[in-house]
Image 1 (cartoon, helix red, strand yellow):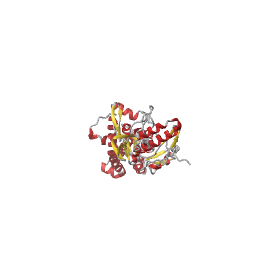
Image 2: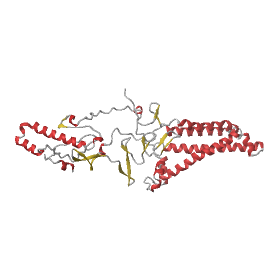
Image 3: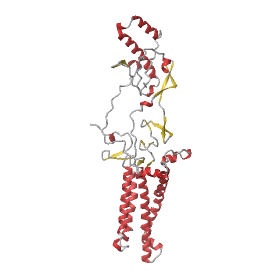
Image 4: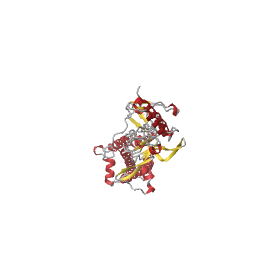
Length: 414
């Protein structure tokens, strides 16, 4: 039976409802966050807001204090759910490195069979243009792709995330391009909820002072829960309130937490800053991009590659419509040996081509071919097509040029 993407996902994420919800590996921390949010509100409604129901006689306006606390708490919980249960902007990983970036590097040669041959190189970084300025992006060995600008690999979730901000343990999820808006709204709403509970608790202390005409100390002794709630909200406000102010600064300058901490001392030019108003508009007024991953899609089985030959002498020719060509599957570890293997195959291709012509080729051409090969049977390379590039893990198919002229191995490398 075919499996779905979320069942074979290589990241550390946790999926629920058949891949419809995606959480980080530390999703259990959400239980602590829920407890820190719900428990104080329940205590507030039972021990504080309930006693204020009839404090405002007109239209029983005191009930609005309880309703507002409940509705505000639900709003915060919804934002928490949207932040932690969706794809933060995961970049789909590749099954193999990008072939177009693979190349031979003649500056770093490897000695093979007494000769210097170019080694296979893969650039670790490359430059892309962002707002007219060059930005260097890195290659991710885990996801086998060049990370888009502002993308970083989260070591906790084991995913590359677009516009990576940070991994938040309190929500159990990475904060990236697709959920940053909800994260900021969650943090700022939690700060406002703290202010609300603190204010109403302080108001209840004032009501007790007026009813009993006593001091603040006597009112605090009559309602110690109000004092505890005020202390809890004051401490919490330092965290969520400070975090709200910090992210307001990041949004106004179009930075991420990762960029701010990593490049703070580099004095780099922020190529993403478009002005305060446009920066806020980019975060809050743009449409959230759809996820690049369909976690519920069926996994398409990739075609199996031929096994790597254990010995170069065991490589078997492969029949194609254009003639006999040798194709050897191997990985990057063989390095410069790929070129030597292709050289050996060229001899077999040339000899097979001469024998296949039979009577159409004069006998003296055979001796000329032997003289070209030389007495030591040194393999001549063949001029490759100008637009042809070697692909990943596959020796290039070298052919006779359009003019039918052979070139030496040294000329081929040049």
